[in-house]
Amino acid sequence: MKPLKPSMKENKRYLLVKGKVGEVERAILEGIGVLGMSKVGLSWIRSEKGKAVISINREAVDSVRASFVIYAGDISVEKVSGTLKGLRGKK
Image 1 (tube, one colour):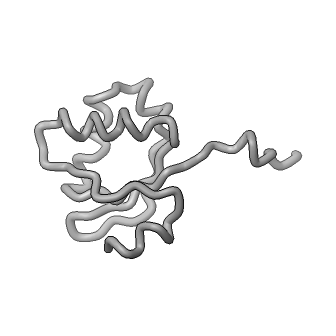
Image 2: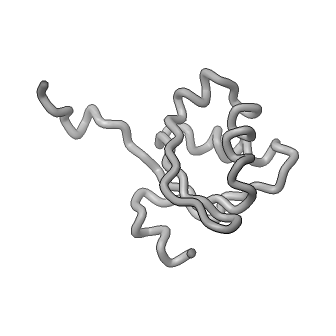
């Protein structure tokens, strides 16, 4: 099987999220639904006390941030970056 060309790969953005880790998926699911969550392509990179680093599709950043705003819990996006190295300074 041939590898994908770089232009065909999904562009990711990394979000540093502050809040309860278990509520992140619930907030996205309630905000944009099942179909929207499948388009987001959510991946967990790291989770610590009250903070998590998640990876999502580049086109879905605005909808994910909007779903965090309308969610009843306390979830906020501290920083958005195109690389994991860009999030290091905010830890």
